[in-house]
Length: 160
Image 1 (tube, rainbow, N blue to C red):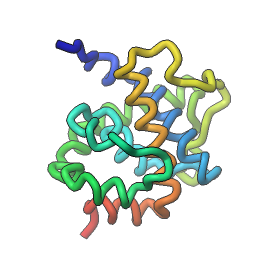
Image 2 (image 1 turned 90 degrees about the horizontal axis):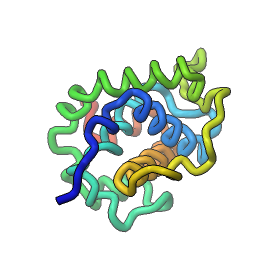
Image 3 (image 1 turned 180 degrees about the vertical axis):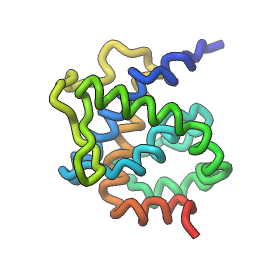
Image 4 (image 1 turned 60 degrees about the vertical axis):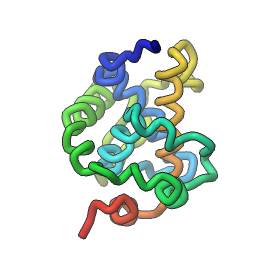
């Protein structure tokens, strides 16, 4: 049996750490940084243990659309998953901003903050938590290459 550290994953400090990984991934394709609403999509997807297999055989080149086509189960109960994680993501954003690891710009975009974290965010983490950090980075890159926030929400089936 593998011990799963749910507390670590729902801790605002770890959430901010994931947020930095997500923002760095996004900045790899779009230096402006993600709009804040995109973080509310990405972090819950990255930490969802039941979606771990959906990330198998993916990399930065996979892209959001292809990932969603390969794993349509991602969209099952997605709105509920996102609603249930709002407090976690809000806490991560607040902690990230207060600790200066991320910044919220006037245009409601997230950028890497003035307090620099180590380049390899996975160093020293358990393999499970390191994988979640990698997923956040990957989702950041995919979201940056997918287009606008509206496009991303459309792809996920969250708009009408």
